[in-house]
Image 1 (cartoon, rainbow, N blue to C red):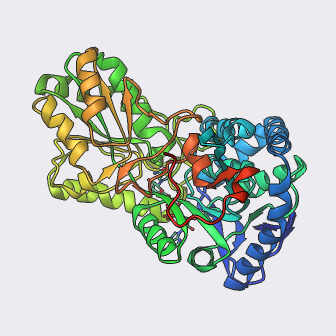
Image 2: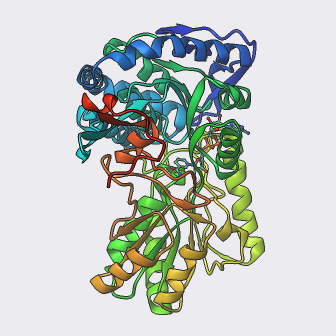
Length: 499
Ligand code: NAD
């Protein structure tokens, strides 16, 4: 039986009316498990109208009262975490344990946003001129939207929705059509937590829904996460329509292994960060850069040994290190890159192409693969593969290792493994990348700092979560006030100064 999913509009699950549907697969079996409605322009416009109506009353709640909704939401998710993690894993293909992490990293941003009474405090300058006070306040934008990718169906919707709602906006979420069930359930839980109907709507859809959100003048801002070409398209189109946008794209994250590093630690880090979630993380490490031939030889040997012990299995198998890829297209793309790497002359030291999980021949499984002697000119180095493939680029020295991520088109995350503080400090200050890990393979910043890459990994100047998210989802009003004597002085024809 194929389930038919809905939208979540005005506080209710709402059937789609466009007549268009997308298939939601079980990546373990390759079978369709649900149909998701793909909204028409008219449906999205109706959702925006609904959100616009609900927003002023929500913004009028005091921030502490809004925060209480977030606090209740945290409790509700906590109670239902296991079911949510299973649902997430069943549509995405990541292991249940990893799905728990997906939810948890989202909740941490909800916890951050629950501090909204403090975060929204404005600035005040007493007696900026004689009898003049200047103060600023941050006010919500109105209706804002989030467009999110398949690979973190709980975390990224929460990264966007929680600060946006806490600031007093109404939020329209357009989640990935590949795994929409968790975002839908999270919206229901927000309602149970006391969020007024219409303040958070989930509209499922594809390009038609996204284009409607981009073009409708009632949507004030858009947060996007996904692949770079779409991120750039969303950013450019939003700007052309006078909207604020922050758009996060693809990645090619390097991990530099210095000769003085603990090689066992570095190898473990590479295995977890390279193959966890089948490599379908924007912060996955996809390029290992050992410095010096001796380091490279030793590291590759350790990687090969560890890859041999990896267990690929169903996403609900507690013993599995990673599960299937999300879809048949993803499987074909990653296999294509493995074929391409061989053609390009890289050394395929471990070949995962022939992996089959017995009884699951139609699932989207791929074994872990390792390329050695990859060079910067190869497409398998330049492009994002987004699968369980680790590539090794050997660097002669530290400066070459520093240049590789710095000159790469993407600049999301990067890591260095070393025991030398001076090298680590120099690296962290000079590398041309947004997020840096020092002996930490996946440096996703904690909720009260901000997350964002550089170069073609991000478009827009404000990051996700942390203080930037509050700036993104609000606008500043600045008031200059003088009273009561100011009104009695008569007109002045020169620009006021504070002299
Ligand atoms: P995607 O670009 O295919 O889809 C992302 C969203 O955009 C989805 O909601 C989708 O429906 C919509 N979309 C797709 N094509 C569109 C089009 N032509 N016009 C308008 N909207 C469109 O990305 P994905 O495959 O879901 O996610 C994987 C990608 O996301 C990877 O590149 C990964 O690196 C990136 N990612 C980046 C970050 C980050 O913070 N930088 C985080 C997670 C994922």
